[in-house]
Length: 130
Image (spheres, rainbow, N blue to C red):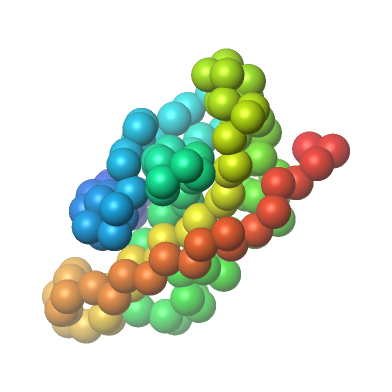
């Protein structure tokens, strides 16, 4: 990953955190990492535990941000989520996977304008047999 991509990703995550907080989510942890994967944001949305993947893009030449949450990524997130739930005694709570898409318009400059931010709640189901 290039430093430009990393910078873009970090910018997208910061924007996603602010966006989610403005909608009532309480952020528990950012960048929860295990040896086999990572979840960008873990949050509470009322009684629900939410595992959030953030995808940030400049322009749509590689498709919209949500398209890059592949089955492989869903399986990886499922593994990490199950580990988190077990480690933190959260098995009695409802949980879901959300995806936040942060799309900057393409242009002459790196950020050609304000981003469009969207959240897809319950974007995918837990992948069993991971």
